[in-house]
Every structure is written in structure tokens, then in C-alpha cells.
Length: 118
Image (cartoon, rainbow, N blue to C red):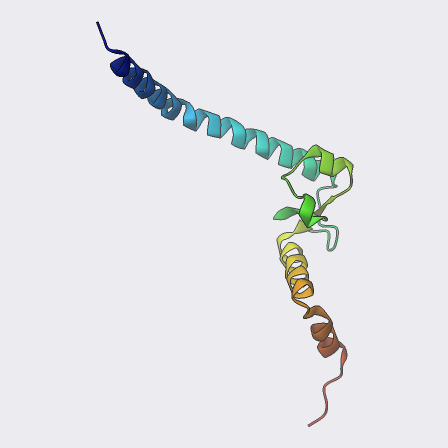
């Protein structure tokens, strides 16, 4: 007759083996669902960048950073998602970083002033 400790160890070993055995399958299913949801959102948002009209290398951007909890349909219905190409998505985040650091106004002033002739 097996001791309780030995039974517990065998059960734990089986559970670990079962977890690792099915882990890759779960990961594939989760990734497939995520890609399907992303494709649906891109289709709903028009399938092109809202700034330049690019249709390749699209990114989904959350308008409200604090509310970005993934690509949820609730965010889509609330109008908190926009579609941007990779270049414009990077630019939007760069501007937000400058704004948070307090440098955006300084950069815009430098861009708006005409260079002095030398």
C-alpha cells in the first residue's frame, strides 16, 4: 500500500506532465483567436491607415492609453481604436512621449520658426 505522500507526488508529477503536454495546443488556440479578432477589427475599421490610406503593415492604436486592455470589441464599439500604418503609429507614440515629458511645445516652436540667414 502506497503512502499518502507517495500518492501526492505521483499525482503532482502527472499533472505537470499533462500541463506541458497540452500547453502548446492551448497557446496555438489562443493565438488563433487573437489573430481572428485582430482581422475582424481591421476589417471593421476600414482596412487602411486613417492618415495616409496605407493598407500594408497596419497597427491598431488605442486612443485612450489608460484603457488599453487588449483588442476588445468593447473598445471598438466605444470608438477608442483607430487604424494606423507602422510609420504613423510610431509617430503618434513619439509625440505622446514628447508631450508627457513637456518637450512638445518646444519642438513645435523650433519647427515653426524660420531659420536665421547666416
